[in-house]
Amino acid sequence: MMKRKYAEVYINKLMSTNNPRPKALLIFLLAAALSIALAGCGAGGNDEIVLIDDMAQVDFDIDYPVGQITRDVTVTQSFVSNSDVITQLWLFGATYMRDNTATIEVALDLTDDSGVPVTSIARWTIDSAGMEDNSIIKLDVDPAGPDNHDLCGKSCLITITSPNGEPELSPTFWMTEEDVYPDGSLSINGYAQYNDLWFQVTGRRVSSD
Image 1 (tube, rainbow, N blue to C red):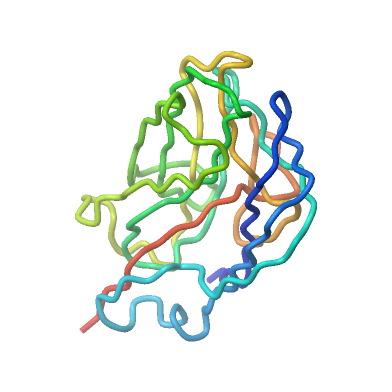
Image 2 (image 1 turned 90 degrees about the vertical axis):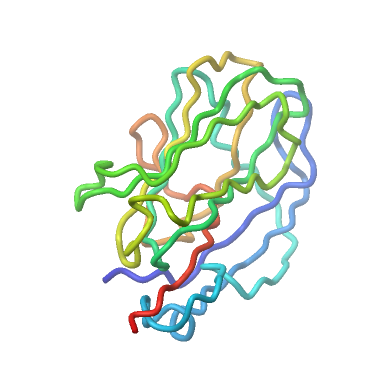
């Protein structure tokens, strides 16, 4: 079974009007306590857990948005669930410091061994007109969803698209500087990237008793 050891969270503080090029950035290095909290995967009680924890801050320079989410853009990020039930998906969005009109659609799917989505876990629609610049967007997942169970160790896929996004009217999402999440990969329009989408997943372990 693949295991995630580290993930890094990059949070931008400075963006220009037309191009998100921050001069200074806070990086939150999130080290997953896999050997303690997640090694058993299904062991333990029904405690709510954050799948990546132990946060530290470091100053850094970074410039990595995925680009505008227009109607011809598809962004995907794969990951391996380390909880039985997923309760939230976090994304880090940015508006380019402007008013946008695009509707953003986010899908969370269970995939087969080849990475093809086979089962829908959750779907969301985001009105980018209501997005705040450089903000973490927390998307709730129904813990009682029919396919939101026994997910630990299984491959999942985040897909971000827009049915109506136009240039200069669409938001973006942040990605990391490097490949900090070895158990998953980022693709933009089907082209694999060397880094990862910034994302966070929270979930719950279910007792096997």
